[in-house]
Amino acid sequence: MKICKYITWVGLVILPLITFGQRRFSVELRGLGSFPTQELNDTKLNVGLGLEALIDYHLLDQLGVYGGWSWNHFASDESFAGTKADFEETGYLFGLKLMYPIRESVLQPFVRLGGIYNHIEIENSQGDLIADSEHGLGWQAAAGVEIDLFERFQLRPFLKYQQLNREVNINENVFATDLRYLGAGLGLAWRF
Image (cartoon, rainbow, N blue to C red; front, side, top):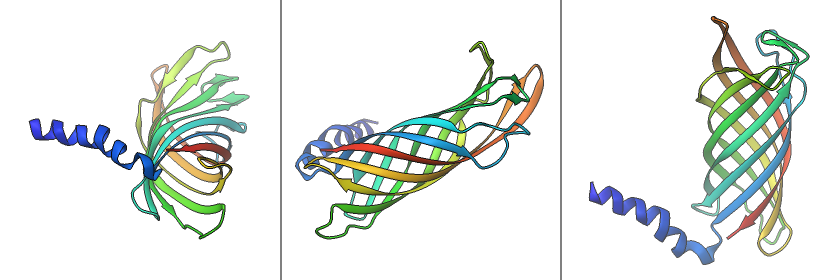
């Protein structure tokens, strides 16, 4: 068991210190608009808004891993959960980042493929929580470009597709929810 503890410390403390000068890490804050691609159990969702916070680690010039947190909010005028219900998808994201470095260019295209571990909460018009799907796995795919601004800062416009299938229980009735949407947004990243 001690060997696992040491490996964890190497991964969490020593490895970032060794690679600090190589700018393999980046922290990114992203805002996005979310456009549902289908109804959610016969409910038409309005265009949503989202926020995400990510950490990237570049294993190689062309390959990295990422993880983070995400929140997306969708309103509806009429839904299976009542009038003026709000749907919030919140949780964690993780996956691989594939990059295509272009020499002597401020632009670097990327693709992200990964999973999400999210849940869907439904709130009524008074803001009271009426249902929670509990966390479950879904997936996402994204593409974008990194644009160098300054020595350590980048803008990262992107497009993504995300899907999460969960069930919610409202007044002893179980509803299947299949949340699918396209996202378009902009991130600001700091490399260190």
